[in-house]
Image (cartoon, rainbow, N blue to C red; front, side):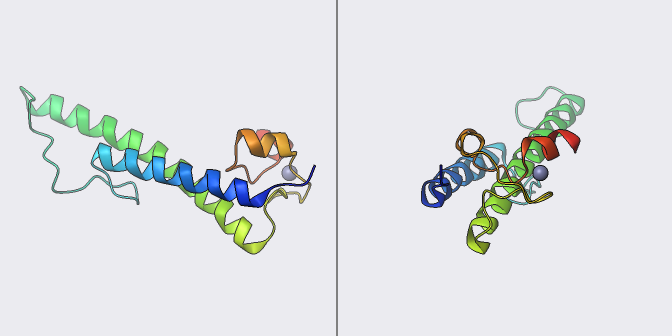
Length: 114
Ligand SMILES: [Zn+2]
């Protein structure tokens, strides 16, 4: 089955928008940093709770940023014309895997080895 890059690209763009939106809601930028203008002191009884909240948000932002990077890497591979081919070993990635996870740039073997 040939890989439908047009629909993969659309899924990736949708995913990208979703991730950027989640980062915004978190008060973070697209680079995964928390925006300086967000006040984390609000509603917290003490500075410790505010710090804990900030740490949790940073962790979430980092996770979202990693997902965003994966989406961008996959989009770049579509542009380069090598989407669907493992970035590590060059094997074709099964279409079913790409459908389930459009941001995959590694085959299952390489992914589990990393
Ligand atoms: Zn591979």
